[in-house]
Length: 496
Image 1 (cartoon, rainbow, N blue to C red):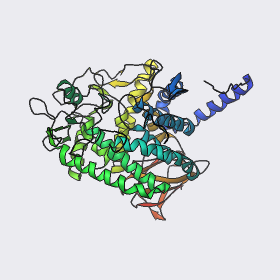
Image 2 (cartoon, one colour):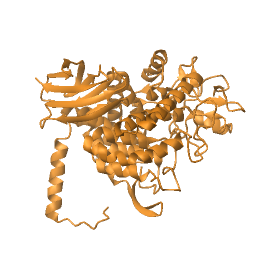
Image 3 (tube, rainbow, N blue to C red):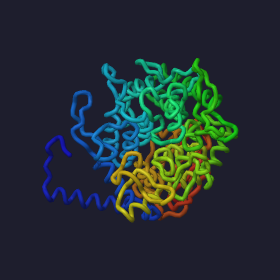
Image 4 (cartoon, rainbow, N blue to C red):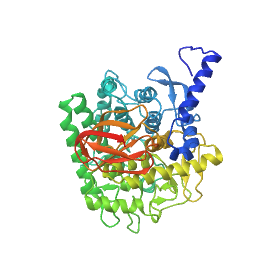
């Protein structure tokens, strides 16, 4: 798809094709080869799921959509598309981000919104900043005011937003769409709509995402010099984080819940089934791990659910709903299926927490499940059904399945650096043969992990942080999992 009328000769196209083949052959370490076909299919879906024209604020644009059957805008899907696209093109990922943001003189919308109000554009922007060198970061400063405007609306602080109307301090987005988490048939959400409780129940995920994007915006504001905004983000993260812990924790089930409010908009308890079971036993119930607000005891209980094969962890990944819950259903859309976006959020959180082995298990399980399906059908589906271990729904989907390419590159592509949500990459450089690297970072989560993919031909590496030997593991040849025991520093990796 071209807007410039570019013309290429057959000779030029053949050179581009041969260059692409060469790049693909060098793309990953040998341990990633079993997943290469699935990832190439996903890459193809990400870049070819294009519709045109779409009218955005009076202008016709080219739009990357979750699938070409949908010639419409999708806010949360688009952020995930951008995150996957970022592994191949920072320019295209920036285009996807820019599509959903609003200029300061735009009187029509604070951000482009359709579908579930899951603010994935902030996750995309943060990842863009991690990928770029300082001069690239500086150019992206132009997006800060746009994201601040988006943030203010999501936080309930501007332009008529009603997201923060509860006196508990918890957020809700049900005034804008029926789906808060993006998980259409999630049992807690289905039940509150059935009982017409949209105006009295706060979904957990909206508050969780607010805390996480507030932490993003604090780090970004500090980096770009918007000191006047830093305290607001810190206060918002603290206040909403405290509200999650104080009102949404359910000691009995060990999950966080959807919170029911009384007529005066104060918290009045957890949304439960008729038998008293917490309706949020599932992925949404463990999302406070993403926000980083849980106590050590809560963290361990949530991890127990996540790692249990009787509850959330299945042979094809993390189940959307706890398999032991009374409302688990093996043939739903999200209920009974494995989807990738919240697995992506949880995987990044495991890096923050220092649980490298489980983070790797999340990634490799997803890659195995998707490769099993694509090798058989050549299709890139929306989900994997737990019962059958087969893909389901739209067959040429990118959208929410895009994190697949992130996991592939994070563990198998030499020259790649990956961190959790609480770590900021200042800059990083690899030698031409990927046998050495220099990485500068800052982190608010001491003990978190950094993944650096090196040349697998060297079996032995040394790692230092500010000149001192650092702890690291290498479970996959060439992939170093480095523990960050200082708030900031310079990591030096060198083949012996």
